[in-house]
Image 1 (cartoon, rainbow, N blue to C red):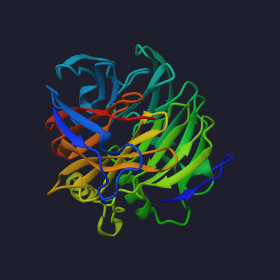
Image 2: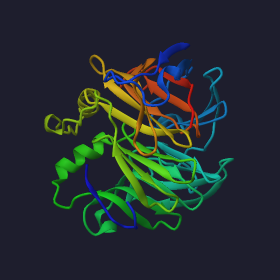
Image 3: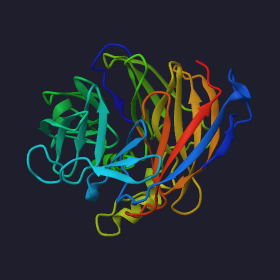
Image 4: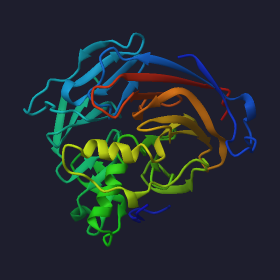
Length: 357
């Protein structure tokens, strides 16, 4: 899973029912939990789904060759292209990652810059990102970002950070890193896996945040000062750590298919979702046939107590699936039917009822 760096003190209409896949009864909510899944077909397929932000009935989708798209979740149709494409200051080429919070949004693309906008997407500033990069959706606050990605070892003075805080002046504080003794090819495998469709960060109601490590299903709880206050592991019995021994990166035209074939054969734990003051949801991708996964929902208290494990999310299937930043108390999943760029694209709105904090 990597080494923890001690920087700061402290540690479409489907219904599913709650229950433990292990056969145990949920400890407090029991069979009262219901989830209804509503499917929204995106009219224009995405080139490749990487990150997604939902605000109200609008989906913001950084879509690489198609710019940053704003999509109506009622109809699945595009409303507009939000940002100008280009290489000039304040413009984005190949938008891939998008995070919004603290009154602004941050976009990164193939120009290797972090570009800051206000909520109306008026340009604020940009910072070169050659020493840091997002692997999953960044978590944006008013004065900083929390990033699950990679940063230069020069920043930590040791290993390669994979979880770090980046302030608005460009300074970086590593929180977790791959150990300096780990071979570069082994680090590369873990970086490839811990990308948009596996793991990530999300905010808590009290101003703190969560990180889920997809390699171990480790859940790390941080306070509003980025101090680790709690850590535990998910208990889904179908979780298996990724088998890195059988994956060898391919650096030619067949590399995407080779990686997709391997990664979709692994359990993919997604970024966490805050569903209440003391309730966290984690979507888990389960291999289901060649190059395809089905999905389950796990619910936990913030102290790691399981509430309901392995709830089936019927209809949420695909070859590339991410959990959107949709705000507290809301679960929206966005994905594509295939790992191939341009494949059928869908948003699933999951209504989880029967929850009590």
